[in-house]
Image (cartoon, rainbow, N blue to C red):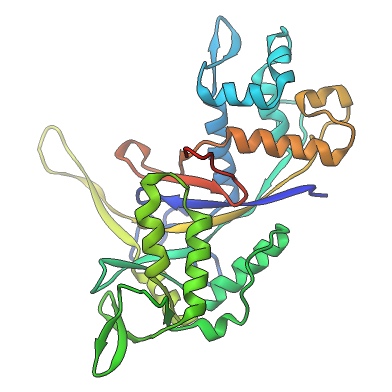
Length: 348
């Protein structure tokens, strides 16, 4: 069914509130979580909608017609697919058609899109550290999930096994370790863990750092930090941190007349902290339309080639930064995206 697959990393540049609605717990507006593990997640429907909105931002309406914004991204798309330039010049062929084929149409002519995304799952969670400011934590269960999802995406190179032997370990060059009474420990929040330095964890941290972060100079510091400051905890300890170490912010609404809080306008919101790293499995098919001519710029000699064209179009057009979840106007929810198989240019 799915002809092309990849995996997309999601790096929180600011706190992210992908909300689950109001609840009766301590937090009025909690984030989305898996039902049985309580791991944070971002629903695939919301993620897909944000991606669609980002692609739609490449075109504008003028005199009732759709035309492309003259930006570098579009020039790259036109260079990658020479037939795009010609077809977009035709009166009845618009950029909207490519969006409808990839994400699904809006209106009466219903058909599924050519892209499928899974819920964004947690991979690395930032936690305050007594030494080194903060560390990224994960657990054997999270890593086993990640390995399984890589296999579903037909990706190789993640040649690690038996993650239970990785628990309570850090890389050899870790900068969050404290030596006390001849024992190596890390202090995360107010909890102390006995830890050991492990060469396998160093290899894992280096693999993750090289795959997750973009190749440009702005991320060189963060790449090196992840190589040193990854902490693999036991599953139960990891769960406690992702349940209790998220950001909870109290917000109010002030009356212009009285200068005091409006009655009832006091609430709390939960956020995934900045520098949280999630991932989503992303899969592509050929356009799901009955008539071959409606496949437009993605039409090829077979479904596999058509899915590859959809994937290449998506890969080139994928924005580096999008906004997910609520509170956009107060700077929340901005995330950086990176495909696992994306090849950076030499100049970044």
